Length: 307
Image (cartoon, rainbow, N blue to C red; front, side):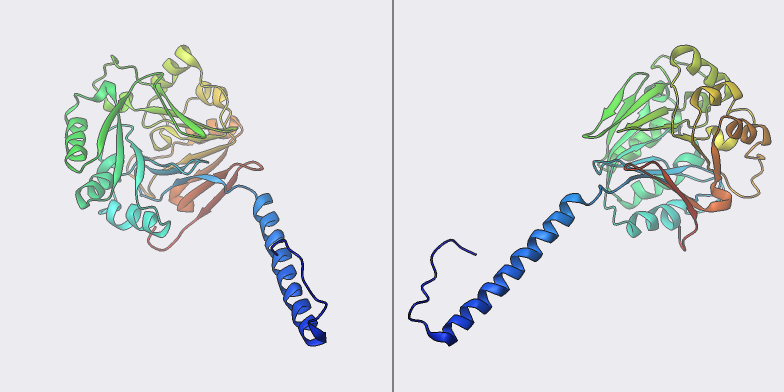
């Protein structure tokens, strides 16, 4: 109600009842507004999340940081045709995500980029494509950068110790260094460490156990909450020493059912479990969603039509 005096002396009983009725309604509205404000004020913050999409034999990972930055890591498949059109894009539309701010590519093998290439070709907005500096001259990486640039996407390169910093989070490049050389493009995969509040997650591309040992020697990443299994859970990656350093609470393996590579390897799964991780497989659970913030992590494994 506005400040001011109510002159009631000469109004009569009917006028008095009208005024009191109006005052009552105004007071009720004010109380309801105050209660609603208090509810909104104490409502817990929305959880940030990491979604491992079911892309078959490949990787496709969506991140939404606590400040709402939309990030994707990889996006491809070696056994699902049209994975960008029929799995990645439907997920983005379902979530109402109209643009990816930063799309990181660990390396340029088709099981990591085929869907991304479809989306770029079809004009889906991607603000920035982030690639490994060490692989910039590799033929497939250069072709992807050219496609992105032609689509209006800025192309950026990362090397060890570089970081993307948002309002609430940072994504640090742990490897490779700019001058790293290797004939195997898997060994030049971007290894990314996400830190968002108290949450820490590591995304390892397709590095091998040898690359894991180099990481430990250079700068042990320390304990993490979430581990993206290296190379789809390969027995030649996910070493015991590396996982004992990370001690992840949750590990997610992105792989396709019946794949010809034998992923995930039994030894790799044992190493994850011995390190204390609860392991989730996209070939079993479909999309794996990890929500964090507030009180700990919530992990959900489920399939949705078209995902």
